[in-house]
Amino acid sequence: MTRELDQKQAFQTHCLAQMGVTSWLSAPSGVAGTVFYAPQPWAMDQAFEPSAVPTASRVAPTQGFESGLPEPMAKPVAPEEKEQSVAYLREQLNAGPEIIVEDLQPIEELAVDIDVPVHVAPLTSSITHIELRAYALANQLLIVSEVPLSFSQQEDIDRLAVKMGQALLKTPIEEWTSRGLSWPGALRNPHFLTRQDWLLGALERFIIGLTSTFTGTPKVVLAGDNIATLFDELPAECELKAFPVARIVSLPELFRIPELRKDAWQIMQRALF
Image 1 (cartoon, helix red, strand yellow):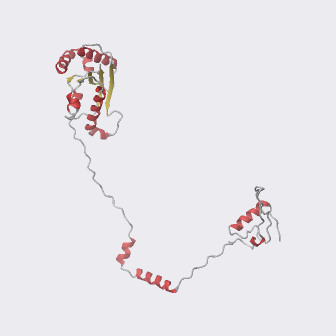
Image 2 (cartoon, rainbow, N blue to C red):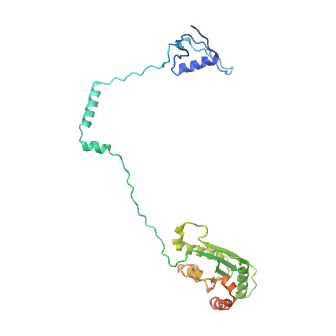
Image 3 (cartoon, rainbow, N blue to C red):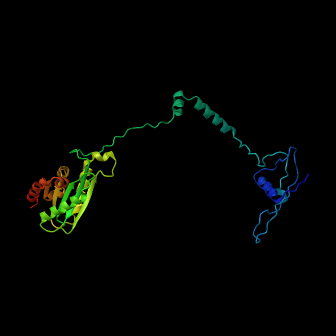
């Protein structure tokens, strides 16, 4: 029985033959015949002439579905090699049981705790949180005051700091800067609470950054008990220790209790001049 396939089926049959499939079954009874297909089923550039598939490459189909690849040939093994393999296997089987058990043991990785020494600076005080507002006045005077975390008298405190600076320097304040420091601020890691040396480092850089443009030796007013305590805990070699410093109550307290301003004024006069 001879059946002619269309172009697509002929190309599919050709691809199956390239994969090693020499026959395919499409009916309950066996179907045998010759497949005719175009030399080149797909369009090609006219500059190339398709070559016809040689008739010898066509494999006559047989009944069923089988592979056209040749079966692999078993590599012959020399008798000497076979005897050596058998002898080596017998030697391994006759080995001591302790060797076999040891070889079959799984490899286990033991977790070992490694102690890494971590230097933690000792706490010299219980101050772990602080809110500061600093005023750099006329490139001569620096007032650093403790402030509440949130309060509504910010403008009043600013005016009080400027008036205090004018009274101390005996000149109108035409140029002044205000900055804040919050510790630990946005840092939520509880590890920061035990590193007071980092707090002291932040305070030192904060003050140095404000006084770097001062002309002459800066005069510093520390307003608040906590800021005064932290200032005393700065290292002895810190350059801030050479500045003249006056210690008074915080500016919010001076604003709420005017009676404290007289004592603060006398302290500043004695310490700075």
